[in-house]
Image (cartoon, rainbow, N blue to C red):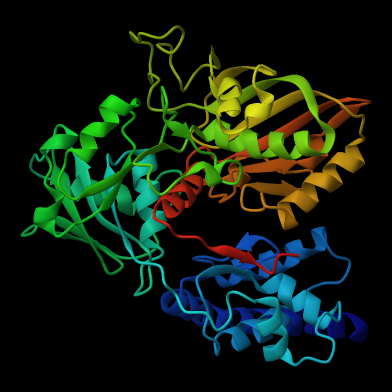
Length: 485
């Protein structure tokens, strides 16, 4: 090995170790900011809630998608260290943007780091938190319920605003608590629970990362008295899908201690279907029953809104390639729906989806302009929406990709739309994505005013992140994304 190669290897190792060391120092600071102020940290839109050292380094590498200059981890650490010495209101703070602006774009002018941050975080820096905590109850503990529990528990701390107080399930047979705990602890798709879970038999509860979660057995909503467990004015998240109209969901409001209900499925009748980022401003303080729509509606509506605002959408068709769900049979058996009785693990199954029509409930401008269908495929999670659209104005692959990349980084839809330029990405790479959708830019096809977009979405985790955002809004919690450039 030549001396030059030895020097190169040593420089590479030194650089890696430096990044590791700064990332390791960032972890306790991010934890403290969340516990003390309910501040969540991102790097160019990449969330670092519950991140590992490697996650932090990878988030910094993704900055290359947006900027020519690399963003050093030590630059972000300097910003984070300064933030740790400030009083902050609850917010999502992008330390990547702030660091890049300070060290590369000279946004600070003659300001020191503290002065720069105080200016850029106006409305957050030095402000007092006036958000009251909200009790949350999960009614049902299936796929969405357990992911919702994970998302709420990871935010546990003295300033946590959404507090998981109880889960309601049918059953109560011997060993039920252990089974519930095991399903929360281990997940074949999303991996092990990040923390500690113990069973409290005496009080019929689960303890997870400092959260005391009462387990309540009931066969119908109205028979539960939450106040006897010290739960008041609760937001009940119904993830059973059993009741989807106002009459059915109103049963929850008959229970003592319940103030509001959020459905994790498309609502029927006059229930508002909310896609956060698109029509969340329709949520009013007086609203008691809301729907977070479907996973597919949450995936496609933000992208469709962004495209319509820029190019105008005349009409189009949405085809979803969707992972199988519990509604299907593992082996051929009776099913009331057409084709869904055939084995989900062995077949691609053509089925209907209401997502295309449901888009208009959140974004009325597209009413009557979209058709849709779905194909269920033998994968357990992560789905793909193919948007075939006729636009009012012509575009190119490069132009539309650049527009969506910027929307993912800087627009009001930055929490909903993510973007990838990878030529090798496949469905399993998107497990755990916190965005409602991920635009696969390399698959984009354009021809004058026609465009075909491929949009990935984690139909479990990404959707549940949207549910959490709706729950926060219903609870009167508003967390600003800063800086806003």
